Length: 358
Ligand SMILES: Cc1ncc(COP(=O)(O)O)c(C=O)c1O
Image (cartoon, rainbow, N blue to C red):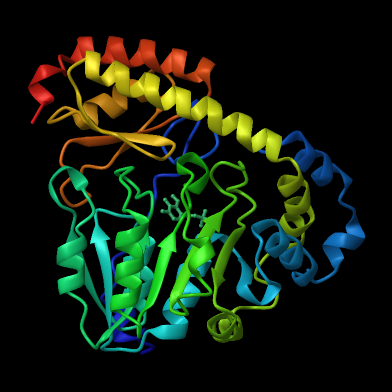
C-alpha cells in the first residue's frame, strides 16, 4: 500500500475555519474592505490571451524589487508568505535538523518545517507574550537550520526589537532566519535593509493583509542574492499566477490607498483597545491589524454570539498559552462602530468582564 513519508504521516492537519464566512470578517486579519480600485480595474481588463499564457514573474519581480529598494536577485515573488515558508523549509531543512519557532505563532512554520522531517522546537513566549530572546538564543544548536519569527507576531500582536532579531541572526549563521513581516504596514519597522549584511537573514512580506489581496495569493521573500539563488531553484517558475501578476503593479502604484487604510486601522486598534480596557477584558497591546483578548471560559459562546450578530472573530483558545483568547481583526471606523456596539452588548449579555482578567 502506498504510504506517505513518516514525517507527513505524523503531521497535524490544519483546517482554518473558512466555511460560511458571511458578515463582517474580523476573523482572518484580512483587509476588511478589499483591494485598491486600481487593482479591480486591472482585473476587469484581463483578457483570454493573458489567461492562456504561462505567467511571467520576472518583470513584476523587478518592479517589486525596485519598490523595496532591492536588487531583483534579492527578491522572489511567492504564492503568499505560505509558499515562502515552504520554500525555505525545502531549501534548508533535512530530516533530523532543528527548526526553532516562538509560540504561540502562525501555524504554517511548524507544518512546513515538520513536513521535511526536521524536529520543530517550540520556544514559549515570555509572560504577556513578550519575545523570549534569552530562551530562544539558548535553544540554538549546530543542528538549528531554520528560525522563523513573525514580527509582529500572530496571534499576539507582540513585536521583537530589531536588535534582538539581529543578534539571533548573528548567533545562528548556519540557520536560515526568517523574519515574517506579514503585518509590516501596521507596525512600520523592518529588517529588509539588513539582508545584505546578514546572508542568513530572510524577510517575508505579503499582499494579503494591508493590500487586501489575500485571494490573489502574492507574497515576497527577500534575502541575500547568494541564498535566494538556492531558494529560487525549488520554486516553480509559475508559482504566482497571471491574474496576481497583472494586478500587483497597480497595487504597488496605489500606496495612497494602503496608507489611508493603515491609518484608519491604527485608529481602530486604539479604539478597540480602549473599549476592552473599559469592559475590563484583558488584552495584549498589538502592533498589527488585530487584537488578542482574553474572554475566558465563555470564549466559544462569545464567538458564537458575535457571529449571530454578523461579526466573525476567531477563537484562539487552542494556541499555546491562549486558553480563553479570541482574536479580533481591526477594520475601518464604520466597522469598528459596529464592533464596539456588538462587543459591549455581547459582553454584558454573557457576563464576560472583570472575571476574565487574569
Ligand atoms: C504571520 C503571518 N505570516 C503569513 C501569513 C500568511 O500570509 P499569506 O497570505 O501571504 O500566505 C499570515 C496570515 O495570517 C500570518 O499571520
